[in-house]
Image (cartoon, rainbow, N blue to C red; front, side):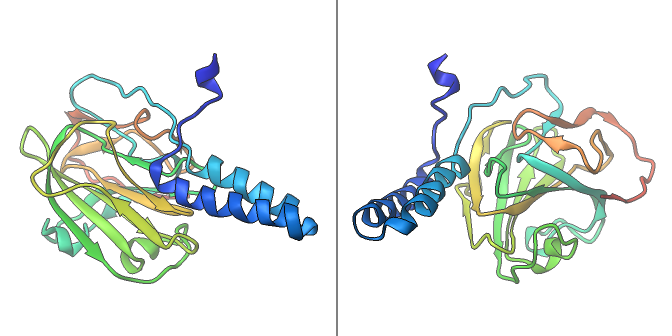
Length: 229
């Protein structure tokens, strides 16, 4: 039962938690009116950087959500040019993460990392459709066991100014494995392999590492219309 209340905190968060906690202590000693706002900020920082365990479905061929959040759109889109995946559109599922969502990013399927590419850019609201193309991002190209290719893109938002990606080219990864996070409020795009039909819709909430977004064992090569929230 204790484990239900003691959720781990990602190591990236301890610096911020320490800063806010220190400021709260100083306020308690010297600036009493600021104590309660800073205490709430300290507690929120612990909440933001929480890293709850997840149970990833183990059946071969499943593609799971790379992040918690709300699906904003499911539509064909050309993957980021830095990944070298060509000009052909792939089905892109865009997940918006509010400041109240878990911000840990997870691998959607067993794969090998082919390329990791950083692209500097703007800091538009992550809910904006233009954010995928214009915002600062970290893109990851994946080679699946059957040779098909997929992609993950971490996108900074209006408040988020720091993307953490722990992947390197040539690294082998497993579905559900943690690979990074974005501070504070952001967007994660996942590009499905060619011919794979998405199983999610705009407005649906995702649980990173658990929600199944596609079944790669079932192909549907018919063109699908773009759907946005």
